[in-house]
Length: 365
Ligand code: ADP
Image 1: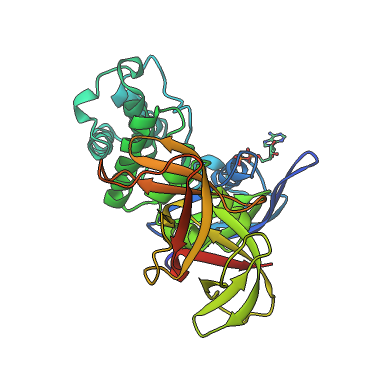
Image 2: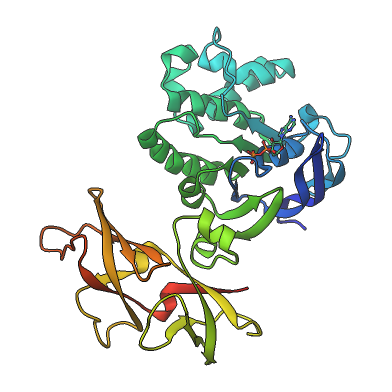
């Protein structure tokens, strides 16, 4: 297909006895920022190295722009891997680091100069072309590594934990910058990260991976707001859980009860797509979707359950509450700090947790 940049078909890769990649299939579209997100050991780096040609699959096929990569060595693939450690030559200037690959390929001097200058422009480092890597900040070194990939005009740039070596604040700045550079150059980026906020911020689409398999692929909003499994919901941000049973089903909503919490009436939740055969379900609710209040807010929300405040954490930007709904159910709520007039709750206080049907997701077991 013309708009598919990279296609992975049923890839299997063992490292000794470890199954690192387990029948993995994915399609990455041309020009998108695609992230593979998952915990350490999920098989992300192995997948990236398979695309780069640094490992060979035991089974399956890799196509880049419709062409099979079987037997194509890394240096002849239209892809470039940016290493987490940047792998810059310490004794060479920024310009020479970026020019190195082109020199190896004996590109003419005039063309080499213009391509290196263009790549340094893209990453906003033109004014630092004669510095050594040691004279650059971590973020700038990262951009040199990126320029070194872009200068080859690859079809795909592969990034392995690109921001892993940076501190938190710089990391957030670089997330936006990387995304802006990618949009500007229009090249497909495939990025591997275990950092969920990073994947959600930068990507057009995200694949959530665990134990060598892809669990879900979707836009950041889809995987965050409509996870299709508990593992995905737990991995992408905090979630509150409640197991229950469906008691009535309507057109767009259904009602569930749970033996784990005392409720006066069944909870109203959004109905998942497809037929509703299973009657045991798991309700997932994001902590920022919950409202905490002293009364049940009758009429304002679809659901209200009573709870007791167990812990209060002030983070500056938020108030975080740990709430006990019953002996076996503890939930979290996160409320943006809206100032001194905001209602604050104390440990031990009895409150109501309120939310609307659309705020939760149910998974059928
Ligand atoms: P991730 O990038 O998601 O952390 P990896 O692809 O690095 O995951 O690793 C997947 C699995 O394969 C892990 O269990 C890891 O220990 C194993 N593994 C990775 N590389 C090697 C290797 N060179 N030799 C043996 N086992 C490996």
